[in-house]
Amino acid sequence: MSANALKPETYEVIIRSVDKVLHLRPHDARAWNVKGKAHFRLDRYEDAIKCFDKALEIEPNYVGAWGNKGSALFELGRYEDAIKCFDKVIEAGSELKAEVPA
Image (tube, rainbow, N blue to C red):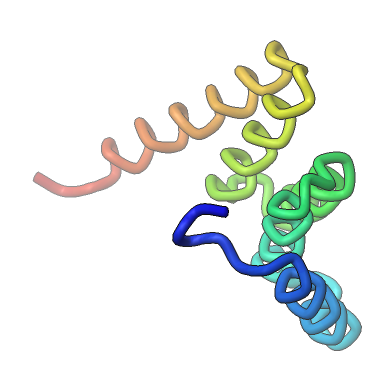
């Protein structure tokens, strides 16, 4: 377990807590992303992808969710799909740089 990793039970608590938030705020893209990251840490990549997809359905340009989805796809060996997600992150980064005044 890496120094930044929490115990699996902690991720379960996070998922339950985020579910409470989502009950009140089902259209909270960041909450879906957090839930997806907790599933990812528990090696539940398919569940994580579902959460990231929900976040992206709500907020299509959510760079963090695109990157996290790409990581989950990568872990599943779905490399071409992962690359498409990572390309979205790169595109968003380019757009952000273009919008920042010099």
